[in-house]
Length: 297
Image (cartoon, rainbow, N blue to C red; front, side):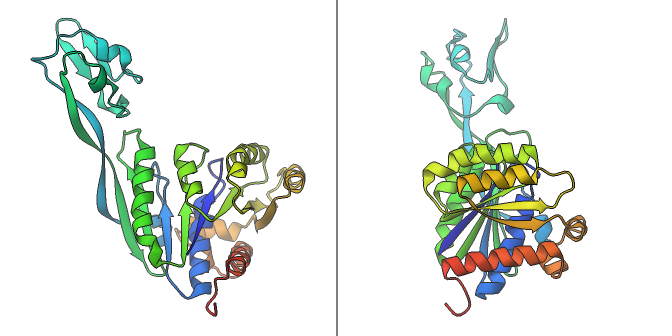
């Protein structure tokens, strides 16, 4: 089994488009189903490109303080120690709680001198899955208004780990950034596919991402999406890739990919002769060869 993590420091570079199309291409090359894991809990959208409706398989819950108003003496200790100011005292009314600000650290429960706070639970999000034909999709989805997306990411990743031994290829799609959830995914991967774009912001965020990726010592390939973008910072980006000795591949700037995306279709299936589809197919063949993954292996 090989785990590929498609990631990137900047939003809007096309990580999800690359992840979905790459997973489909690898399924075609291996002749087997691929497990696709969508960890973008704030905005999972792989299922829209695959035209499936995922079903909930797990609820993700986190700590919620349960306040015993008869025991609470309104000393304010929990208020002082709450790092997100989810607790506050109202004169002549007592202790109040703002659930959307709570990060579930349970500090209030531990510091209360009267043990007036006990452990409760609240719904944070869901782990969902769907049968998408050549792909088996697992995703995490954050409950609207909640902030504990790392917990949902972790729950979705752990669920995927429990089933992924049955697959030769696993493709993980991460949200943008370089935070805790991204590191969890990178630590679980065998090969890192870093998606960027030929812009100054794309280059800046690639540099930031590589400060996280390089110490892991894992194989990495940079995918320059929207290659040929008019006015793009191609020379700066290619110079950086050369200086760092990074392997890279390109997916051409392609209006036919945009057309497929607008229609909610994977370009590799909707328009397989499009320049971007051919580039994704070439990327998949390169990765499959490197990993020894083919119908004959």
